[in-house]
Image 1 (cartoon, one colour):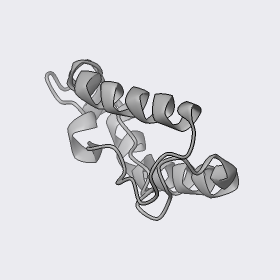
Image 2 (cartoon, rainbow, N blue to C red):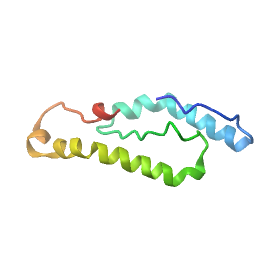
Image 3 (tube, helix red, strand yellow):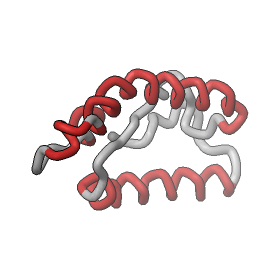
Image 4 (cartoon, helix red, strand yellow):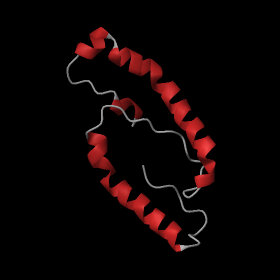
Length: 94
């Protein structure tokens, strides 16, 4: 997933540094995604890349992603599914 689009150009050096970190994280993302069993990806399309004031909105998006994944997580943790070899839940939510 690419970093969010920069709607407004950075207005100070801190925003430039934060944007650089977002871009660097995107380039290292494949490593941690490949090592993960479960990845929740909240829908943050409506949140600007530097919208730090949107904390409550971010929490709600994370909660919605977790609730959406909950049935699959419960199934994954049930005894028959937990014994299955080679199944990775992360692929369903990545």
